[in-house]
Image (tube, rainbow, N blue to C red; front, side, top):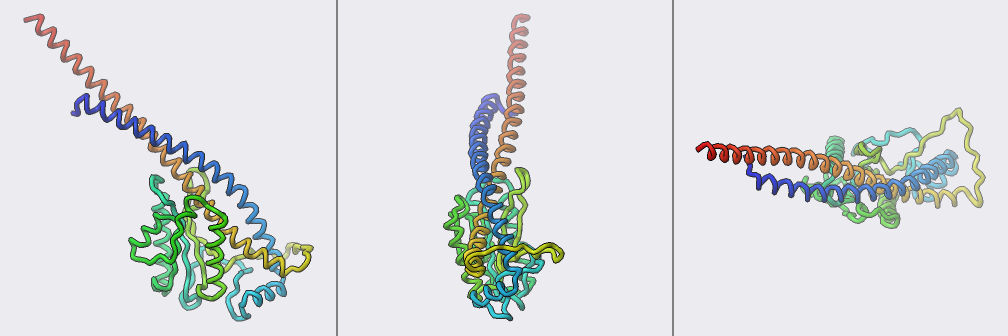
Length: 311
């Protein structure tokens, strides 16, 4: 059994740990509130622009004009898909010779299984791509966050681009630069599909890992029986789409970065709460053990005194 001095030292150590975990929980909670506010403001805006673009591109002439302007011929894969498409469909090498995978993680630890889950999703995606006929050299990996960048190198893959700053502080300028790089490579035919992997902030206790196709941009098809949206557009529909399409693509990357950031802070808040609760339970157990040990010492001293008096 540990001595009273050792138990007292452990109690002091756990109390210091409790102070750290409590402080980290408060910081993560404040950051989560800020991230929730940011994504709450941006997500409805991005979704509405996405719906507007989808509505306008139901017009075949406008879509053909956009394809022509972007340099896509009638036989090429369109930069936008107006039919129902699976959000997490994995391409095959025969149809799409080269793909890009963008993975979002955190730069730091102490977040429970947050990084492990997104790294597992990335590994599953790579396995599916290899099964579909791809070699590792056919896959360009963009890493947003140091933890996934380390995991990519540890698994023997080469990282095409590392962007750790976008993980710590999601910034529209940096997100736009990433989106422009991806869109430029897609438009030039260098890559045929772009896949996003990130943790989605569903709630405080749920941050599921998501695999989602970014390009070609999937626009939901309107119900054929529904009334078509009659937009009044000035000065020219194509000019508006020229501005709207890159804005939608930029905002998508930015909202994903915000979503992953909110998920990170939620996971850290929960992890620090669990750590604080465990520390409190451990302090209670150690205090009880200390009191029992102290009581045993007192009882032994009393017995010694009583035995001495009898002698």
